[in-house]
Structures are given as C-alpha cells and as structure tokens.
Image (tube, rainbow, N blue to C red; front, side, top):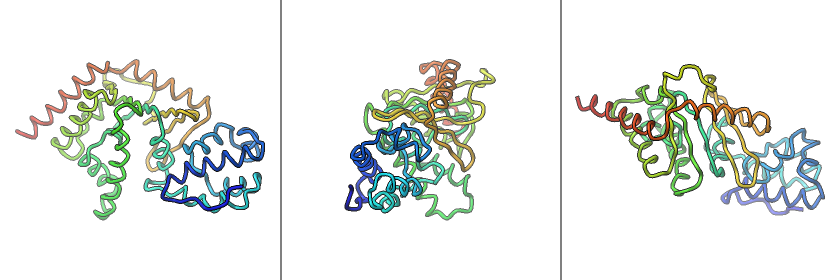
Length: 278
C-alpha cells in the first residue's frame, strides 16, 4: 500500500491519482468496481486517477477503507485539493491545464485564456469593487498564469465561439478593448487558436442559457463545464457531455467563419482605437 505522504510541490493531484491507480489494481478492482460503493461512475474514478478531477475528503476516507490504504488518501487529500482559483472554478481550471482540446462559448466576456492583463483587472474590479488591490493582483496573476498553457505551439487545441456582445461591450476603456481584441487576432493569425463570432443577427441559439466549456483528454473521458454567477459545475456523465457537445456544434454552425470572424474582430478593434484617439 502507499506509504510516504505526497510532496505538495510536485503536482499532488497527479501523484495522488497515480497512487490511486496502483492501489486499485493491487486490490484487483476495476474502476467501475471501485466507483460502485462511492456511488460514482467508473469514468469518474478514471478522472481521479488521471488527475483531471479533484478527490474530496469524503471520497478519500472511503477509498482508504475500501482499498485498505491505512489513511494514505485521507492524509494527502488536503495537499491535492489546494488551489489558487475560486472553489467553483478550481476543478475546471485544473482540468483545463491537462486538456488536449478546449472548446468554449463565451456570451459576454472574453474567455480567461484570451484575456489581457488590463482586461482581466477591469473584470475583477467589476466583480469586487471594494476588494483591496492585493486581492485583485492575486486574481489577475492566477488568470494570466492559466494562459501560459498557450505557450505550447500546438497543445491544447483552443477553439472559441464569442458572442458579438463580447466584442461590443466596452470593458474598461476603448484602449483596453482594442488591445484585448488585438491579442485575440494575434493568436488567430499565429494559428494558435480558432475563433468564431456568433453575430447578433443569428437571434436565438443553442446556448442562450450561458457559457460553456468542453475539455478533451488523452487518457480520460471528456468533461463539460457550465458556469453561473459565483457557481460552476463540471459534468462527466456521457449523456450530458454529448448534449453540451451538440449545443457547441450548433453554435459553430451558426457563427461566422473563422476568416470572417477575424475580419470583424480586427474591424471592431480598429473602431475602439479610432474612438480612443479622437
């Protein structure tokens, strides 16, 4: 059985997942068999083992009892659960860092992975107008750190559908918006992201209820994440993920082509630049 505690400085969730796989296989159980007494699916256990899902303390205690691991997972669950992100988004952000493909629909805001520092600061100030500057700085740094995964020239595949409202709603100032849209255009021109704009003229569409993020992984089932005000939920149920995937496919079918979307993004950025100059 596992012995020493995990080193929290070295990807604790991934290490905890690897130890779970070893302990489960040593006990001669399949992922489905381990999931049954926990009332979760075998795919959920696979996501724990892959590090794409967080192990909660209640699960850790039950896993120690089922697999006879002498409190190992209970002791180490805390280190694996630590996150610099808000509770409702932490699991999604950590899964995002492991994804091979991310598909996202944004109805009102530029997605976090595409935001500039100035844009992110304006968003956090709007969310928390009385927060001290130190808190805003920490939130901004965490958001920019997420975007570092785009430093890899190929992985993950990033495909975003932006509602036209994302372009038209002025966040901060014309200068902030111009730079934010220019960053998106630069990523598209560098072939680092696929971006489509869903124009107002399309009217009703498949994701009117809010934002949507789909994540695919090399060695774990796909996930869907939906978010509301201060809340978020990560789904691994195949039927739910399939339904959200269909909604995203419909969005891409109704959106402008990537070429026309890029032209619109750059045109709106130019409008902001001219307004600021005037």
